[in-house]
Image (cartoon, rainbow, N blue to C red; front, top):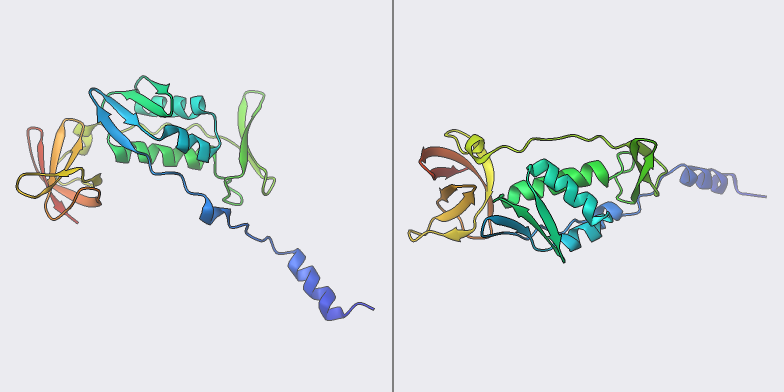
Length: 203
């Protein structure tokens, strides 16, 4: 005869949806972005799309559309016409991941893109959930819109000035951030803009 307690315990466990832990392990590689002449390069593009488990052409088409530019895939790299900030590229990869990879039901990345008629659907192999993919277009702010006195933003410090201040570059603008070092990402407030030079205060 089955122990009533054991029977109830098994029933309780059967109603629990266990987390596989994929959320903790799933991490999109940090985009290695640099300016090369008049172009912007994502050095580890192939690593990023491999982690996302999406076709490189699909990811590239999304990024080109959001940035409003032309470009190409060159081996393991992606090259875009124009100069774009790393934070801008990182934000777009994050939006792509949210819209085209992560299941909205269980939060896992175990998904596939399936075309149903004219509708692109995201189907989850982990929980069976599915939803149509919403094509949202977030128009990227131009540097002129971003670099205005009083604006707050996150910037990546790229190198040090001769005076020892951290320097970030966005488009044609050079931003000076005292008390920072190359490699840091900091939140700043723009205090003064003079031509293509912006003076800031770390928040």
